[in-house]
Image (tube, helix red, strand yellow):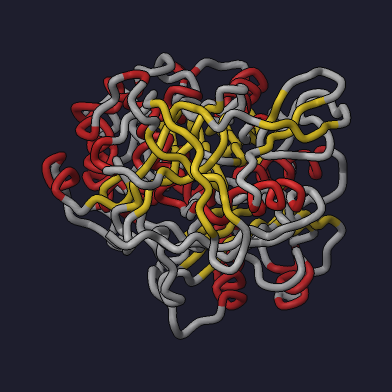
Length: 388
Length: 130
């Protein structure tokens, strides 16, 4: 069964906070839910499907569904790391198509900034994870795992730190127009290269921000979308996969985006050249560069040339990306950037992005993300959305 | 320069024979009895064909596939993927070397380093000139 046209995104909300020491994580989830429902013109009583991932406090979806006192007939806590929420939209569309729910709520929230999280520190070892016995001694943290991907890309294709820096420069050009963005200052390639080295070859400004906050989405069946007053954003193509170390056949030069992107474009019946705007997960600059290749916007190994010279800046380049400022400058709530990718794509399709970055006649948009660790094992999800 | 303390790995039924051999200075990897392929990290069932696997002695020779020096850490350390002569690529640390002189493709050899309260773990250092 194709999911094309089976569901619509009727509500989208990004929490305006970037630091919330005075709120609980559960409270942030609920505030996001309220915001997305208000955006759609629906109420809590309309929700009959709920989706969340590992950032939701408590067991799976149970604690948050109880906290919000939802009356549900469909629950899903698919955990693919930061791209979970992109996959949730597809899962919600499938559930709607199968008659399992009518109005699906997806929430994400967290407070890593208030809780002192840093991507340079080791995450707690889960002793039962099958890789722990073989990797825990070696200090795999977020930054150096992505760093190894960038090192290999540079080795094989001649990609440069200057080219990676252009991705941050483009994000900063967009963030200057977003009053909620954590970093609003426009930066230059030279400033990125002059920022401290974190994990070779990634500088501090190659890394995303750490923020508190969250977001929520409302996915509904077509009849409900037509009854609402909001512009209609159709789910047109979906794809998901994971990529790991393949038993030791490690190849760090590409991501699961190759598979999830291909599936989404096939379902949508369109090509990368048809996309007017792309939200691309930017945990690090290298994440963007590899995904642009993997989604087919340029050939494998050509990402460095593609992203240089402002090619990702709205109004200037061929592929306007992350016009909210992305994870690199705006927001990376709960260390998970998937939901903000969908939210900005919805804004673009509705014509509700900031006028300075709004893409003209934006009828087809893509939201894509990875989750987990690009260089060891990661989830990958792609969503293609169309404005009707 | 002070060396980084290596956290001890969790030892479990799939890893205990490896770490017991490591304590004797022997480096093992896992090979499939059905398809014959070696894999990493070691598993009871072959990740290529789900055949039964057994331990086999490995040479401890390899080349650097990729690496990243964690400059932000104190002391800095070099995480890496090393492609073993037997085929599989494994996560490890590069030790006993000048981090600024490391290169992808460089030949390396195994050196066991003691972990913090646990068994020796497989690290690599640049191979001596032939």
